[in-house]
Image (cartoon, rainbow, N blue to C red; front, side):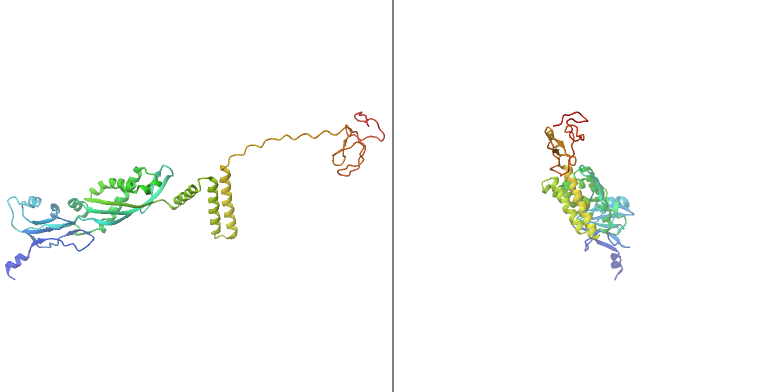
Amino acid sequence: MGLIDFIKGQFIDIVEWLDDSNHTLVWRFPRYENSIKMGAQLVVREGQAAAFVNMGRLADVYQPGMYTLSTQNMPILSDIMGWKYGFESPFKAEVYFVNTRQYLDQKWGTSNPIMMRDPEFGPVRVRAYGLYAFRVTDPGTFLRQVVGTDGSFTVEKIEGLLKQTLVSSFTKAIATAKIPVLDMAGSQEEVAKKVWEVMQPAFTDLGVGLPRFVIENISLPPEVEKLLDQRTGVGIMGGHMGAFSQLQAGQAMREAATNPSGTAGAGVGLGAGFAMANMMAQSMVPAAAPAAVTATPAAAPAAAGARPCTGCGKPLAAGAKFCPECGARQSAVCPSCANPLAPGAKFCGNCGARLA
């Protein structure tokens, strides 16, 4: 190899990147000690951008196309390097290729429940998850704010930051949207739009765009979902308290049947279930009207000359010696005051009543 060939081999005359990965966001052209020849070809393919950095300072950024490097199409670098009157010698600069295509089907989700205030249920906790797509929209800002001097920056290195931004924006969006939790399932597109509006400024500051954001599911805690299922069941039964009591009793029976504490525990659970159902049912039944008071007719006065039995108190016919009701032997008594009479008396010695 001659001296001329050796010198030419030290100069780079084609600068390009053939991306064979599916997760690389930024790749630094491996210049090593070689210098880029003035007049070299820069090839930027669709879905790429190329940025020149000199001495740690971002210079010119190129969109897709083929460029012949010269002072005319490197205005910022020419100014940094002091090329005021043209420059034809090789130069050294770092070249970063940035992938600007969309990265699809990125997953996001709330690792912890988000507290929100619902107008019907009060404070509730919700979870959510879905998909999003992102792309680098401003290569210069992305290099300055995110990549730095990393020569091989992959999607995995920014996933955590993007997800944190998404969840934070989701929390803020549902807090301001004031959409009841029961309506969120049917309003996921509306919620997604509000989340996108909230998070877009934060992504713009990173040089990243969010072309797609989807909420696949918004869920409530299991205990809240259980109450909603019960409420739905009552609604299907017509919304009557009796139906709710039957539902509660049925649940108590099912829980008692699966109670591992044995027959005694099952009986207690079943009894408690029925008791609760009965109390709730009775609490909804209007108080019964007080029963009408029926006057009990007074007992007919005893016939004249009759006297009560000394054994059972039943009225006796005048002169009866034995009670026809209880059979007790009767002694002579005054029919007016029931005072015992002397044999053969014609008047009562107690009240003076005339005796028959």
